[in-house]
Image (cartoon, rainbow, N blue to C red; front, side, top):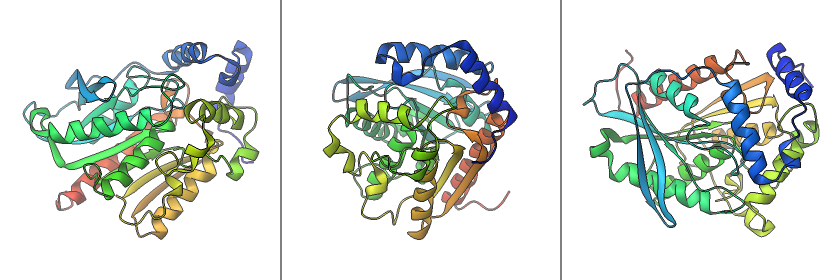
Length: 322
């Protein structure tokens, strides 16, 4: 396996020396506390944005908390393109606070609106609760576009890890007409197949915070009924066809059990005629986008993602090259 970047080596060593147990050794609530503490320690100070406010979409189990960000330098009355962002955390961990830094950076870099979704978490709310909340949030954002000062013709969906899984499914549901259509999908080291059979599951078994065992822990809590894991709403890689899906950015990292399924998904999208930007980081690990204080690659990758969003929205609007 290729060598890790020195930043990753140093961080992995620090985690090991701290004595923090792996997530899979913890009960869900303890895992959430460990995750929250780790993110707080690893994230840089938040970037200022032009506006931030909390909203709520109507969900089947009650209000779904949302957080809206408008990028720094955008005009208050400007109608902006919008990214609906689903946080990672194995469908068990994370919230609006854990991924606040990512949303701020993307809003500023893309000069856009980002709306984060605080969907229900497993194991209290197993599949398909998170997906239904994500779908309700997308429908709400599209329906309230005028009030939110966003362009419903320039909606994108995105997320990291478990959030990338949800975003990929939303993109396909939009293609099928079951949800508002998105014009771009941002899949950052996404989960695409809950069967967990990719070769990288056999490679990444130790030495990093997220291993094959960690992912089994997450999947077992999110989709405890194995029969549900084969439905493409849980495993978008199992959709009969990816043709007609929106253009995509797919990020993968070598030192990540999700690496191969993410790369395979990007290849399937491209084979189906979907424009794909595949960004592979050979010396990085899963989870780096919420580790900007320790990982130097974090900011450039988020800036690249923001640039990809700007270009996708420019193309969707038929605007000339600036």
